[in-house]
Amino acid sequence: MDFEKILEMESNKEERATRFPGVPAEVPKGLARFDTRAVMADLKALETKGTALINQANALKITTAEESADAVNISGQLQEVTKQVKKKCEDFLEPYKKVTAAINGPKKRITEAVTNAKNIINQKLFQFKKQEEIEQAKQQKMIDEASKKLQKNLNEQAKELGIKAPQVAPIQAPKPATVLRGDSGASVYSRKVWTAEVVNEKEVPREWCSPDMKKINDSVRMGKRDIPGVKIFEKETVVTRG
Image 1 (cartoon, rainbow, N blue to C red):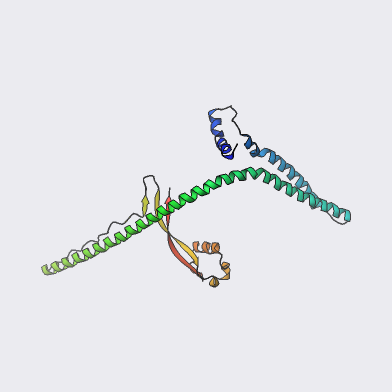
Image 2: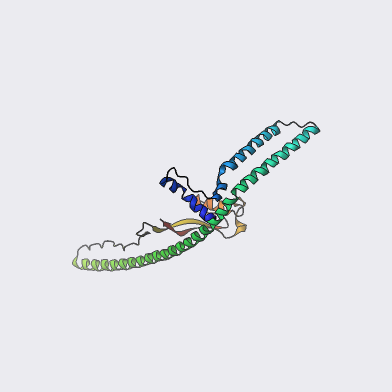
């Protein structure tokens, strides 16, 4: 039986147990090796053996050739316990490695594809948002110019009549939404984050491990804004909320 069938049957065990209480669930033979009871019993025995050897090692006093030989034997036995424990664990985990490899392949393929598509959409949304902001700025400029012209005409008319001219109230052009929302409840918005980029490694001080980007990025997140050889700037990124 292949691992996909094994995983499918394993995932359905709880449902079968709920629907048919008291009825033994079918367990594929391949899953027998995933039962930890046997390997845990073996590891417990090895732990007991190791503990006894550790106690002997702690009590050792090597003053004679015979005691030296005993010490060598204990050292060899301790080494053997280590080898046996590693082998027990590796043998037990081998089937899991195959399952993990089988699952991680589709996981990587699917997540990379959908993430790439999401990033493409978000970039298009980002461009749409920027275009809206540009249009809003144009509208605001036209409104401001029209308001200024109107105020000038009112001032001239009021002067001719010898009265105080009314003041044109500021008019704000509709601002584009800062958060773009979908009917499903998902939303996309942009935010600014501080970003670090090494522009000259020779200028980066030794304290930054010439250069350790993790350390630099952590410092920038904590508020550091000036590191020789490093360009620190704000970058606008797009975020999706499900």
